[in-house]
Length: 328
Ligand code: ASP
Image (cartoon, rainbow, N blue to C red; front, side, top):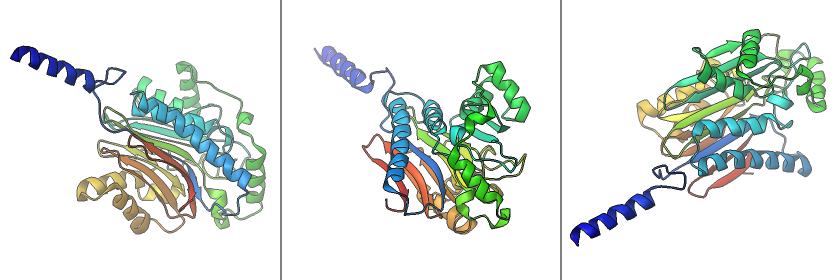
């Protein structure tokens, strides 16, 4: 009888310990995304505001489904970023900004916190979803970082969709670029500089991942590489945290910002929030940047020293937010 009871108890534990996909249940999953930080006017018409909220919500739901169903953090961040790349509102993929030559050059990176595997691309002009190519670099090559033509050839080898550069044209970015061209580059107000998309996630297996994708900065010089594809600057994930940045790329790069946040947390034992705040206040200047991050316990932090950052988050504890400014 004792044996039968023990058997019954173990069977029940086993049954409840597995979720529908057969994974051992891990208590937490969490996802955060951003659609760029910068000077975002509070006077944005309600209809435009709503479009941003809807775009963020839609992308959030894509990643949320992956994580809820027991999928990987890597799949969640790639799918979330793809959804943002396909939305012309955001400066990545379809809505990418114009370079000084009036073209589009895209950068992207993805990183697997559980293995430190990473993939990045820069200066691609014909890849529809740069984040998917970055992931292919990570999984299908011996390398981490491809640029320009080599990256595009690699896209053909791995079956990643390519499009004409004009696919990335949008009227809004075109007008922004025209206004930017009329001004000296150094004096550009930050509204011209910023915009990028990114996602970070913790999955049910306790693995972290980060992904970032961008058209870069409006009117950027031909060949300019930003922080986004530089592993450790705009994109980083390890066993401690996954971070994605947005803002003035040169400043983010100088301070190796995403990696500094993860290291500061690891080496001092402070919370993710405090580590992010350290970089924003002690390393960067007001108006420079915004970050989203998630740590190995599923704590999410989304902070910026700009007036706004398009962002959202959702987790297994039932929290869900979509915001643009500090409290809205
Ligand atoms: N960080 C990006 C870059 O410098 C731009 C941005 O996030 O808005 O390319």
